[in-house]
Length: 121
Image (cartoon, rainbow, N blue to C red; front, side, top):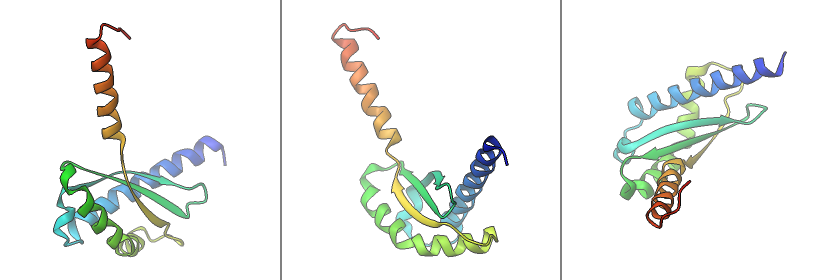
């Protein structure tokens, strides 16, 4: 199997996991803290044994509650995912906060401050 082909298969499987987990999050979990959460990305290890699932929220004030609710729901997410995927081994799920938006905001504010000081990029 070519390396590029394996990369495409892995990316498709990551997308499928992300889509299924977002459905499970919306339809099967009844925790009101999760209504402002969105799963943004899934990264699988090379052996497909662990899926790191990234999440973000539109309401930064609820970040702590959402984090607790997602950590508590990890096993439920995995078991629901197993019943949908129908694969031999369902990856272990690790939930982590996606800091991409905050990092982008920080960089934009730094660039804006530098632009005000007369520096160009």
